[in-house]
Length: 322
Image 1 (cartoon, rainbow, N blue to C red):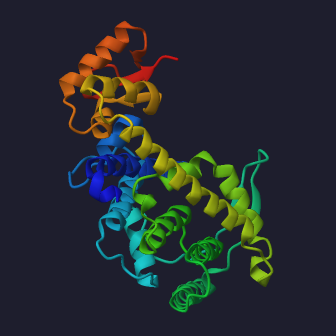
Image 2: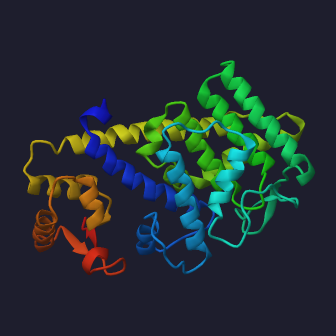
Image 3: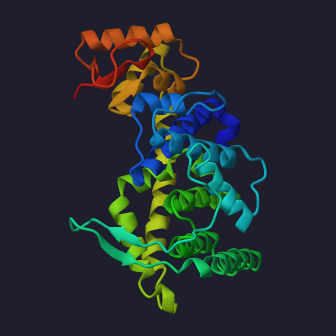
C-alpha cells in the first residue's frame, strides 16, 4: 500500500536508513567514521582515496548492504554466499576476506573494566563442517515449515555467531545476513528503518542476550529465548517506528511548503540535521524554500547552525533549540 501511495516518501526513508545502517553496524564494532566523511563514503561508484582502515571497512559494508537491498531476487543462503558477503566487507582492506578462520578466536567483554572471555567458539578444524551443517539445517527447517520464520532466522544467527566462522567481521556479517534473511521472508521494514541503529542504541542488551543464549551451546543445553526475545523486540519496534514515521510525514499533507518544512524541523526531524537530509525527507520542496524557512526559524531562535558539525555550504548542520 505504501509503495503505491507514497513512493517518494519511501525512497527518502530508504536513503536515510541506508546511511544509518552502514554507520551503526560498523560503530558497534568500534569502526567509526566522521559524520561528514560518512555521507561522502556512502555514495557508491565513485573512486576515492580512503584516509584510514575505518573508511575502507565502512565502504565495504556499504557495498555489501547495497547488494542485498538492490537484489530483485535474494540469493539462497549457502556457504559460498556467506563468504562472498565477508569478501565484500574487506574488499578495500589488506586483510583477506571470504575465508574461514585458520586460528582459534574468542569472544571477550570489557563490561567490567577488563577483558573477560565470555565464550570460546569451536576450533578452526570444525568450522567448515559446522557452518555447512547450519546452512543445510536452516534450509531444511524453512522448507519443511518447522517453526515461525523469525524464530528460525534468530536461531540461525545465534548459531552463526557461536561458530564465529571468520577471523574478523563476524558481528557485521551476522547483521548483513539478518537483513538478508528477513527481507527474503518478506519483512520489508528492513529497508526503511535501520535495525543496525536500534542494535547500536541497545548494544549492551544485544551482547547480554547473545551471552545468555550461548551458555551451554557446546553441549546443546543452551536456550535461544533470551536472544529471540531481544531480536523480536527489535523487529517489532522497527515496525512501530516505521508506522510513526509514515504517520508523521503524511500529517504534513495539506500544508503549504513552508509550513511543511517548519513542522518537520520542529516535530519530526533529528535534533541536528543537514540540508541534504531535509531535502530527502521533504521531496518536492525546493532548496530556496528550505533555506528561507531555516533563516526565519534562526531569527526566531528556534534553530541554529552547529559549528562542530559544519556551518558553511553543503556541510552545514542545523541544530534545533529546545
